[in-house]
Length: 381
Image 1 (cartoon, rainbow, N blue to C red):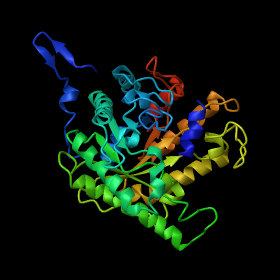
Image 2: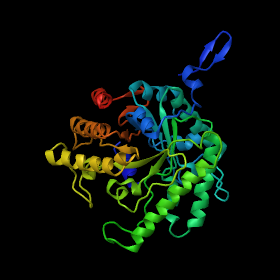
Image 3: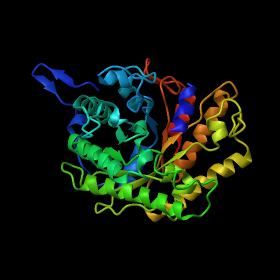
Image 4: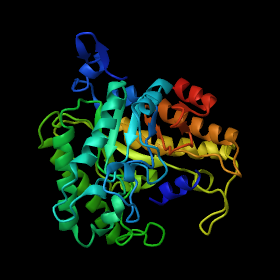
């Protein structure tokens, strides 16, 4: 969540014929479940982009009893079909849709307001109609994840109840819709602090808790109806951190369908990606691209390939990115982002750019703003 706050601070219609409404060929295939492997789906995704600061917007200060109050709370306009088509026309193969499902939820029964589900479903449907893949998750969602170490039963009940509802409502969509178990919250400093605790029993407990949540996610989806028994699933790594996810304590869940990929995020070096000025935790880095910088990038990408891709587990980098600020030029940002995309694609991984309104994609003109960056993204193999 801190990464999102830092990033945020920078800040085809259906065919109508004379005989009536006819679904497009793409829409006809929206519910198709193909025999392709998860690795083949990840390859098909190519390069992706996030619909950030939109449906995951949350906060007690948000007023209103309608979906648009949340959809626009963090600066996004109301999403339109034209905006989604613009992502597809730009060449992005997957749209990641982060969602805070607790926004319009009965806090006793954990039942989500159907209006919220239907609105997300509408946007997901637009992307699928345009031929894109979609990744849909439970995002930070107000921070209730922090309670897992102390009130696990209550949190697990909430978690399962959410996914049971999502499985019912999205179960008819085909294999191009992927469910993601959670965001970055899988790791609890109340149990283990990586910077101060070392190898402790708390570390083992924290990893075991995440592994249990991910296994519960798979079990819940596979026991539901529709296309969910064969749906491709994205398993969140430990805090989605590369080092921590490659730790032997992290385990991929057992999946009878054998259709799981792992998710990590990449904002390294953080003082380049996230800082516009010096902070108490680091000195802002205005430039990127030295031999040492490239060596660091290659190290982490190789780590993912060796620990997962080479062992048959596809990797999706669900978020990455640096943005231009007063201390960073467009050229520096482009160099970094293209390097991450190229390094990921060379190793068979799908990188998904973290984007919010007006940073990389203009939701008013429905176009990617840096066309040279986009060209290099799409040429990466």
